[in-house]
Amino acid sequence: MRGYGTMQIRSPELDQRLNCALRIKRGEAMQLTGSVFFGITAFDALIRADSVFLYSPLEKRLYVGANSPANLQRITGLSASFADLLDAFLGLPRIDTNAAKLYKVATGEGKVAFFLKNGALDEVVEINPETETIESLRALDASGKTVGAILFKSFERLSPNLRPLPKEIELVAYDYPNDSSYVARQLLLRYDERELNPDDFRFTFEPSKRAKAYRIEQFQMRLRR
Image 1 (cartoon, helix red, strand yellow):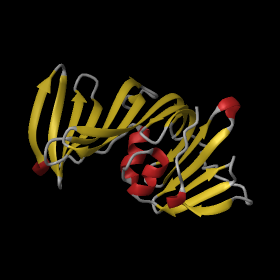
Image 2 (cartoon, one colour):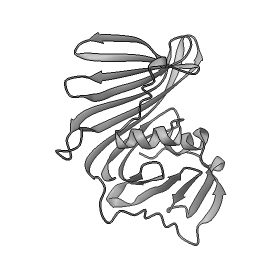
Image 3 (cartoon, helix red, strand yellow):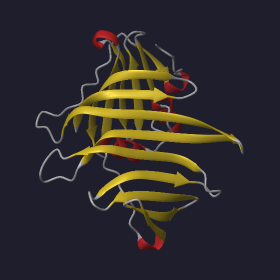
């Protein structure tokens, strides 16, 4: 997939809105390019199954590291697995339909919610049966608190042969420092246009050869207004 839109990152460390271009090949890699005023590139990131690269052209710095939830959080503000992140940005989440994990089904307000056990977490999948679309995924800890959520909104059909895909995608991760408070890290993505399976698809990640390399653990998010 190749797409263009806007991205809003909100967290205690960062609050920033960017124009963005995305290139995703499911199961292989994702390139995410963010730009600010007058199309100036703020960052260019390439996320592969085994590694993460983040290029800052204004600083001529190239950050390199292993693909891990911690390193993905340094880039996006969210801790997620590689596969889940790519599927979320595509708007095509993969759901484990193993009946042995399903322990509850609930209905209400025109939606159907499926509750599944997934190791130490419970997963809640909310589906709109009329449109046959997944509208949200939530992960709950043992105490029932939501530790992560993905919301899908404003569906559109890009092809008569494909199911509708969301134009708006919201990813949220929650931390609970204590029983009475929480910290939310949120990424909102809105597609203005996108193309599935383009013939001329390729990744365009080409950092300057003069860029100085750093470990991605040294990357610090900076607030820009």
